[in-house]
Image (tube, rainbow, N blue to C red; front, side):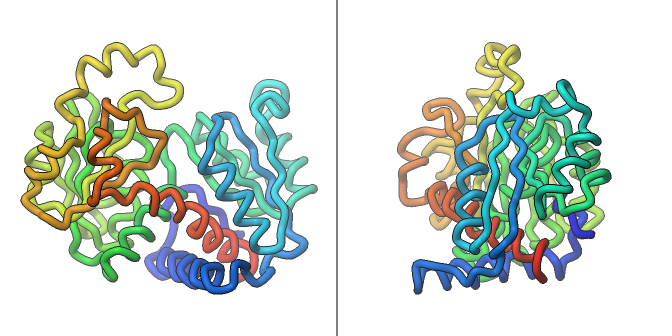
Length: 304
């Protein structure tokens, strides 16, 4: 049975199958304002421990456009792992729905759901990784450039779950990655190893200007993610040199460099307004492409 828990679990062929499906379904919807009802009769159960705008709406709308239905299960309703064990929740939901999408804190919860549910499980986000975001990001860059092979993506900021998934996907996309974080905020060594063993170059540095020099894309995210509120004051002290602003774009030396952010953005912290809303920004294409990447993923998991 197929699951989608981490990008590195895909083969290169599967990765490109999903992105190609996303492109075809996006083009179909743009032309006809509807998609073929490939998921008619299918129900997606959506388990949330962390709230979300893009994850909930993109999955729910994707299912509706494809003729299926999505069922939102709020944190208080399920209390995953508290009111009821994760295996028991998985066993019950697997009897009701055709697939489960889970947006959780612990990555182990996603793995337990996949082990016990008996239906495909999608990692909608965990503290370790955010593979659905990475699919949309690489899809967005593929749309912009036409090819990904040999391009360079610079990450500036916290070595977090989004970065882990970008590193997981880098060998499949053929993208080199440069990472600039403050000391002590580097990405997980295992995620870095996945990218390097996959044959792409990965540079780790504490200097954001070094990371962006010659880059084709610059990516950032909030300095304190959900669940890190207690660290916020310290992070606000440490991270200001890692702000993505006009000066950093100019330091890339690439007049065509593009800027990515998975959102929500704390404007004036990790990114400035003139960059987020400027001519180099792909933020809104990224956000839209969560919908189309989700469609490709759901069709690949359920009907191909």
